[in-house]
Image 1 (cartoon, rainbow, N blue to C red):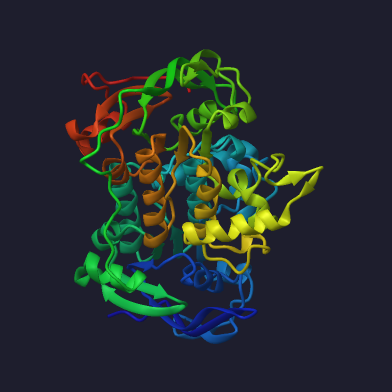
Image 2 (cartoon, rainbow, N blue to C red):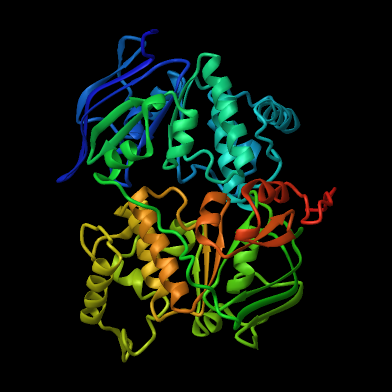
Length: 513
């Protein structure tokens, strides 16, 4: 077997009293796809931040091609050909795709013309079937499209060791497999690929080796060929867990809670994003929205919750017209929202847990009297939410930005489902979460539907939709390709609809997104 291109030996990293990595050994070989698994807070991101020079290790050493490497800054890592696509992207929203990619490049020439740079980036993206619009501004892109920009940044720089955090999270099953085919070609060409993923079947089917981290240490390392769901689950969470699935012995009621009639809306570039959308959701129903990233999902969630105006159509909630209702009015009527980006839209990272929990109710008598916040009540409720939703934190008075992603998501859910909402819009609610956190989120959504809430469940993960939902509507280029009962369709049919094929078999062509 070839020698490892990267060896991380006895890596230790602490933050105050918290030990993120403790004696971690990891070998990465050229020509392999190496998967990292583990719960949020297990030390995966910290370990990769050490490798990419964002953090300096407190102990241990890194070897590159057999020689000790002093990686103290990201520039040191880039010089060795190491690049990472982080879960929370490192892009400048007010710059174009081309400008973001060009700024990351070490081979800048200020004599290059804008058009030439855009052509080079387009060619690089198309080579790996990661097409992006090089002239578009990043703030105009969906989360999935921004992820592609991050990948193109690495490829344009010529990285030889690529680290990707949940690279298939925003893709259809067909596209996810195509992505891994692309990663396999990269590995076959001699590149080393490290993939952080929470999808066990995906890892077993596409990786060469798997390392599981738990509590900052290596719990298990195995060939993917030797891996099983049971073995991986036990290594990740310490016990075997089932998957929270929709109860098959309970049907949603007949009462219609939410309706959209001929709704259209525009995106941030003032182009059509939703086109004549009509659907209805019953009491207690979990209604899935499937589609490739950037096909109107974000705009749909924002239209429902009042964050984006409609250009045509009507929106009804429990028989009342809320088409022009404000966000606060919709909150008062029982609309809850779990946005796709919890860090920028859902939570205020600089505030503590107590203050994030009251963001929707800070002016209510329960929490505010004569303009003075009731800290004792806030503390009491924060403690109750901690127990009820299994939220792990350093203290309810610490900034939530210090919490892991899974615990941030549980905190967000705790706030949004308080008071038994009538309608819950959940956009990619388990994206990037470990097994344990994802189980808690699924349980919360199921419990809310059993209480009678109508749930809009937006996801590109068709396995999740088939496990959780009663019906599914498929978006493509802002149009609703069709609505299917989960027990009357299959993943391949929904996948075809996601590419533009309607229920009748008619293919959608063109479009003016």
